[in-house]
Length: 151
Image 1: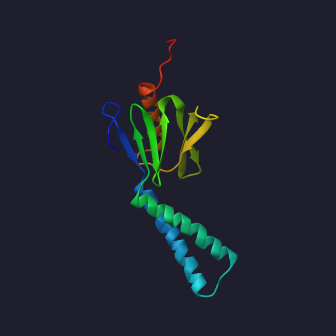
Image 2: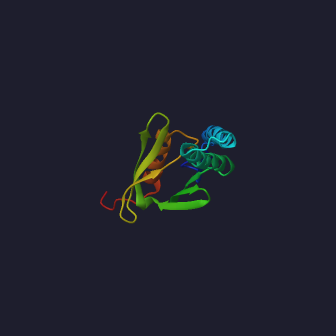
Image 3: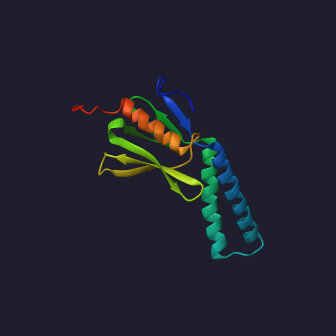
């Protein structure tokens, strides 16, 4: 993580180690599926495994080569993943909190006022823990977000 609330921008990258773990594990399962196909043991489960785990292996490789990135600055929160960037102004987002999904996966939930509004999520794992990232984003919104004119 580079930067701080005092010296923006704050740049946080995706967790390359977790991407590597996903890529290697999925790659091993793809290798098993390829070996089954090579041995003439072709069935639906093998083909589904080949395609599904092949996609996970590709995403794992992309997470190593081009990790996701969050850029937090006084004007917005920018999320870049797979080359596409989505930008949220501080007036459009609030209430960042980690939401555990099972033992190893946590997504970051937040309220979104753009469009129809409702809940939105930051997927993926980052180089800082979800609870720390949520606290940092809430502090950034508090510091740089819109002010209540009635206070």
